[in-house]
Image 1 (cartoon, rainbow, N blue to C red):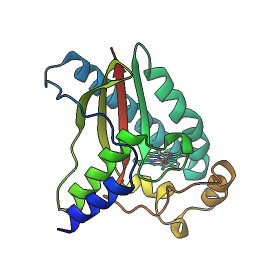
Image 2: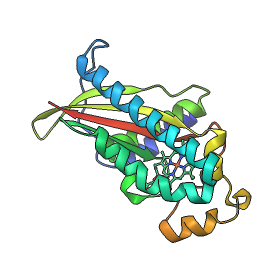
Image 3: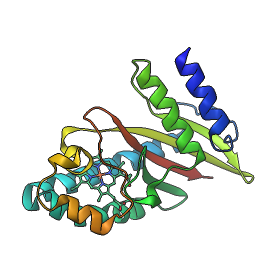
Image 4: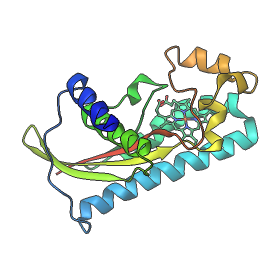
Length: 190
Ligand code: HEC
């Protein structure tokens, strides 16, 4: 009952509904391409983050994250593929979800509220006459993430100041381990 009410409230207040999509075949080569791009973004970023945290600590790693995260996403985005990260709440406003992404994130929150685990979603939509594959892969908050996305009261020295300097509108703190942080979002136009 409650999830139904929440969903109704979301649909009433939410953005213009995204055009209904067509299912994606599991062996669709575009889906494989999207999954490769999502996996590459995740592993490149995670590897970089782990190295920086180990060598310079979280306050220094923020500078790297703010430079490298968009750069890695940009170099993996070519030939009709766009890959990026979006958040349930965002540090960088550029990573705010669009209508489609927001709808998927809201659905995943419902799944979690109902005791489930969010799963990757893929759908073919037609936007402005262009056939477009949209793929969303959940990003959950791990313990490593808490040094920059957890409770600011527990941040290492320098982290709050560095975040305030670079991200005056930061809303991406206060996450708990295991919580939905956002998604890797891949778009492929054909
Ligand atoms: C060293 C600090 C630091 C750590 C640790 C960290 N992040 Fe971030 N995170 C950032 C910064 C800085 C940005 C903004 C990047 C940008 O400008 O695009 C960010 C942005 C994000 C975004 C994009 C949405 C937004 O808020 O702008 C997601 C998703 C995200 N982080 C997830 C994670 C996850 C998951 C982990 C753990 C695996 C993690 N982060 C660990 C600093 C960190």
